[in-house]
Length: 586
Image 1 (cartoon, helix red, strand yellow):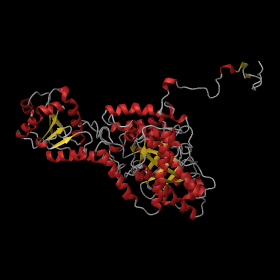
Image 2 (cartoon, one colour; image 1 turned 90 degrees about the vertical axis):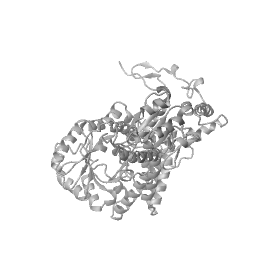
Image 3 (tube, one colour; image 1 turned 90 degrees about the horizontal axis):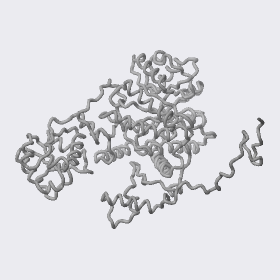
Image 4 (cartoon, one colour; image 1 turned 45 degrees about the vertical axis):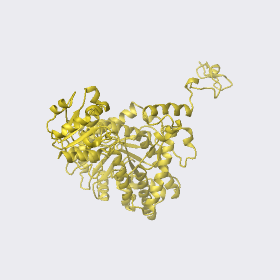
């Protein structure tokens, strides 16, 4: 059979089939939504307002449009994030640019290499490489035995990124001495901090066709910096790096081609995506203003956040890192490191390492997240958040250039974030929400990897580390059905502070409640409002007469507080409440 004419005039396609022109719809006539599925902004406001009124967050007199104010949240960088992305958000955007990565991202494993432990780490990294890892991020020193550590590693196929414990220049030279005449992957990085860049190190990296430097913004993220502060700090550091090398004779393009950026990504999915997209726009602008003739693509390494992880209920860290890895991939990271769930406890073991590398493998090979370039592109909400974050970060960059004290600004963010955690507006599952006092934590050898990291739940972890000996008597009033909601709330709140409770169970009178009491210093009344009204005051008074030194009520404090000393309800400053309770128990 010969090929038929494939032109439009021939009306045929290769293979002899006529073009189905009769099935082609009129251009612009394809409407995927049925008429009953087409809704206006006012329709959404009305439906949403109905829900908020039912939840008593709006009154019948409130205008439906108030839902935008009610549901818009503000980030730690004072960026307003509306509840719904709408086309008007794309009006008057300041920045533009899209991720450059296409296809799979590089799965990068992190390994600490203690002195004289190279053989054991070599076995671990070979397991990682055979299990799907494509590059290695190694915390090493100038005295590291690279021959033992990298035995069996094909350096031309698996990039090695160094992270020196000290003496970054000496560590880089020791690695190059080991590599000698071996061919190195062009993603290999000597890992020298950008602030320590020198012309000699740049020349060494250029001669080998590899990277030499890292702008590691996770160092300020670990101290509690906001997203804009992390981005602004990275641009200020990168600008200083460019000045150093261009003053030494390198072009802006040459210097830019030797550096990689490293950012942390948390389980706040959309801000994570926006942060990485904003980073590329910021760097492109820096290079443009620096006069780069041909700006090389930004090399971006994303790491799942250390501060977001918890030592308690560490298995929840798997969920956090999965969301963070998804955000990193969608945000266009070239390399992604998922930290093992047991990292906060010490040296990760086999299960943690396997889950960490498989997280990226599942996102790439089963969820096909990497099949689409910039999957968040065009999203009204993400595009707006990316633009806002880039603008906020550029302002921070300018302030740092003008000599502003970033440490003081970070301290303010830490206070604001910890206040949100304390009031449980920023919940941490397994720590501030649904804690399990009976859990047995996995034992891991300490490795110091999290030293200096300010965990978002640090204050609650400190309480869990030192639980009080005394228990709170949970004075449950009425039937199980009537007191369960508040009893559960109070129990979880106490557990978040390491405080155990002794539950009275179902009771039908003050006498039954007092009979269950066993002399605890602190009691907490838990029941329904009608029960409180009927015999709550009598119960509190009787328990105080029986020996209780402090009486707490679960729910809003009564108008007549004579028989209670404290109250716990939604929105309470949990940290302050738990501190008071622990003091009473001691």
